[in-house]
Image (cartoon, rainbow, N blue to C red; front, side, top):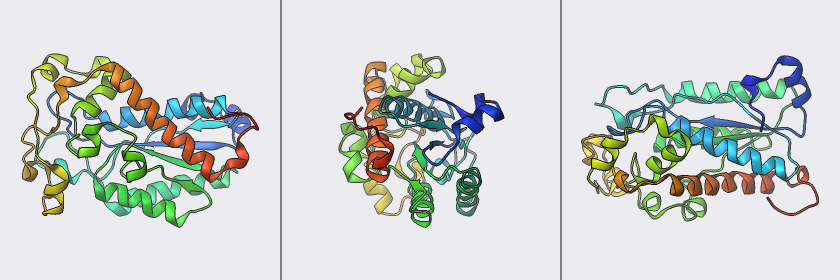
Length: 253
């Protein structure tokens, strides 16, 4: 796989072109319980991007992974230290500027590989993708089609720093997990989706008093690796559907 930040400009010149797919990991900097780091969403976004790039390259598709976007809309973690949020217009402009900058260099296929699930944040990504229908795809794992391929906890909604995210970080960046804290945490069931529909504007309002919900103590690295693979296949299939002409005549990855 090729990460743009580790290339020189002559190497980037060789990589860039009309058939290149640029994968943009999108995360956030926000609290994820007492056991996961603030960059959890960035870790997940990068992990699924790297695995997707591996699968795409196996299928003959030229890929480049862009440096991640590490800030997003994080209003739901208000009240917990470490949260860094930006305005919707800031995120929109940043994403749009990245797309336009790549277009100037003949890269016209961009994938938003997002791991931050706050609804207002997701809405911005959807909007930019709609504005650039020929250039941008957003494989959105909050959509039913893709959500149903993921874990039961994810589908239920109580997954912020729970088993789902903790498993992925255990698989992708185990040194960053406070495992003693992780294994001691009790399950927290707050019915987050229902609380959001009822008007809750933060995890505190929804009842997640330690900035997590779900069952983090049940997390395993094995499950995390499997989830990364599922997320990567979501990206690969989305690329195949959007730009089938990029794939070799062989089989699927």
